[in-house]
Length: 520
Image (cartoon, rainbow, N blue to C red; front, top):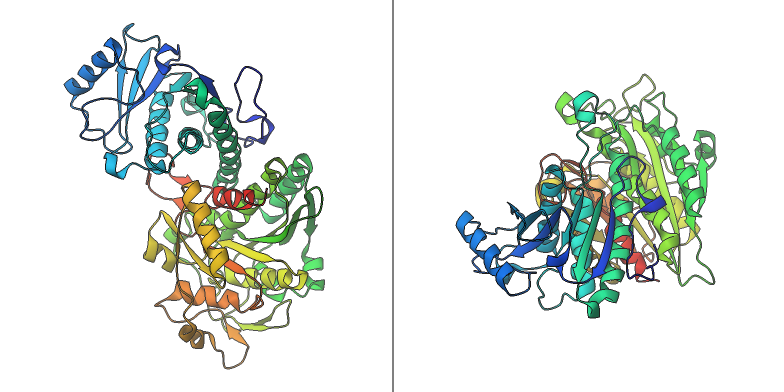
């Protein structure tokens, strides 16, 4: 994390920023928002309220409220009203950001307001933006409200632009600087909020960059090289295992998925070792299918259009691991990224094949499009052999979880109530939605095979649950384990909220960092 300067100003970004997105610095400054000479000033309005929030009482506030009333602005969550000040304020423009109803006011309403306002300013040629402090409400101290503003701003203006040409290449967003003004007594808490959110958002946007990259660019070998380079820069260990080493480890399920592609697989093992004796040993495991055609159980053409997203779990692990040295977590954290393509080449596995995992357990493959769980089976069994205090896996695993929870929430499955509770608390603090789903023992019968220990698919109904039960087969019953099915929220096909545009979201990164920060 970037330290605060003597002037009471902290910058977010620097070397930790993603490789392709532009640099947008964020700072916290003591003072009145109305005195800021930014090109855009953001204040707030609550639905149904007569006034505006974040502006001191007086003639300026009265004039601004009169303008808002004349425009008929309703202040619904995530909506904005842009006003040109004509010298009324030192700022050239004022953006009124809607927060929705007061009784519904929460941190995500602030994220939505800040994201919508930052995006509007970014599109209106403003190069700098100043946020007034958002309104207070119970359970949301200054640090958390400031974090929500920074989240909304830095996540909201993200866009991967490296492939645009011609006029589109010149349409890069205008914003370069952002700040939040707070009373002097709140500056220390605001600085902490800016530091944390800037680091978390930098990691999230890195994950978005890598997931948004097409499969022709991000192959298993290429992502291994990227991970190795970034790990060296961040100060964490990185070990890359090729197909020969995977064979020595007995990872027959992982290798089976890779057989249909001419791109060789890679297992990337990242390690963060804290200074001093670690208080916890944690494994993070990510599914990393750089492109999923479905294998011989071929997807439809429309079903393949977004399948570069299938590496989102592994990329979230990478982005999380890179941030841990700055987070100063006292846990020893290992990140495992299982990278391969799933293609229908001549050597591809076939329905009915039996694969042997690193732990010796055998799997009958009934559907080659249920490939992610095959990779995770080997990684979970490998992690079990290394003895961790807790294991967390992330995967864009099932369409069934998307049907159950929609595009905004991931499913959480766990064999340990305490671990599940801590992860849910972290997700709530980060603004990433998780919902715990059950592991019904009765459904395990659906995984029984006539010729192997387990089969890789079950009945259609409840298939998010049976997928999680399949994974549980490869982790010891005494090892606390959680599975995050992020198939819905990892990649948005529509702009579902103001601070996440279509494409990769970096789902899981902020939740994991929030969770691991509890070990700091």
